Image (cartoon, rainbow over all chains, first blue to last red; front, side, top):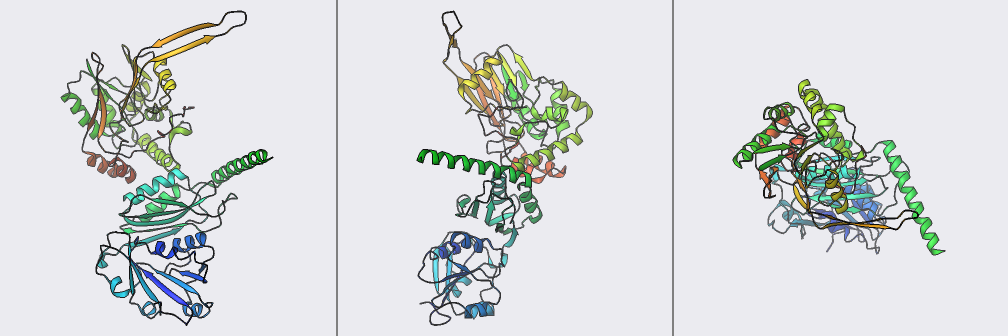
Length: 267
Length: 270
């Protein structure tokens, strides 16, 4: 049974190593319109890829700012269901997390039989079977906002192959939201040990008027990351103002001619 | 006579040395080189000097041409904006270190070489920049061989070796002119071949090994050779010379991506 903040508000904290499937496990419940749904990813500030993808994919879910958490919890509506995604970088025994009246769910590789997560959790969910970093060798997290940047698609592809292949340090996890010149935005997901790099088109309107004014960004988890080189390579794959305008005009004209054709057929 | 055909060395002295030793072991009597002696790799001068010292007939590759005439490719040259920026870094670096006499030598290289019914080019008979990919439309491929007036066309540039046989070529030609009966002609074209030598110094086949081709002019037998070499040394030299470390990373994985080799229908407009 879920522990509750009040009689009607439920808080579910989800923890696990990077790539185990925490966000995936949470998202299966976010289509439920029965209760007001809330999501928070503490420690990641406002520029979190997970937070943004939840907002894009589940517009009915409310995002909770992480600061002033007690006040926010107090103001939640009745029947609210809150998912708290706890990254690997958070100390689960810290007073603020340990004192939260919540149900604790750990999403863990099936092969992992003993860990701090096991000790912490009320419930263990089998997740992706990945190698879990040793507690004394935790990976670093590098993140960069990319809002306003539009990528040359083949360059992005090359960059991600190199990044996930270890060209800029040992990478365990990559998550990102990237804008393409045809106005579409993609969620990119990679976890070491799982096959390939997943590209998921986000179901949001095409942005065809200048630089996109909506969140995009990247998060990389790994060891010995060459941060400056990653940043330079990302920038080398970003399109100039002129190139963005050129592509957007092309796509607008393509969309317009397809619309005209469709109207002609209907007529 | 047993020929060895090498291509796309790209300043990789270590790979060239190993391939030459393998050619020696295979007892080839003559070597032909299809160009791209320089670019990306750390030893452009040494590679050219070795080729010259052995008096190997060589045609001019697109990178050799760029070092002589400056960058002037059409939009086909790079598969991505990222690759283009890296290509420019490689070009600038090579341009700065190349010796004057090496540049002069590169300027003298011919577009094509011939030996009886064999023709040797870097990209295609039309351009050093054009790719003859194995998936290229059959008619277009046949036209390229016919335009070279050859039975066998040797090319490089794609960095992936292959042999393509163009068999049973049969062209029907109908000509209609005012006031004259239609003329009809059938042209039977005997077997033609395109043989791509791959790349000695910048492989793109997913492994770091150098590739080249052996061809027997008496039996028309082709052998695609894949030769391991000390690529770690080339990688270390790339970094030591101040070229981008990503060049070494890609070289070690056979992931070179110098130019656009993924569009078989593209005709270079340079």
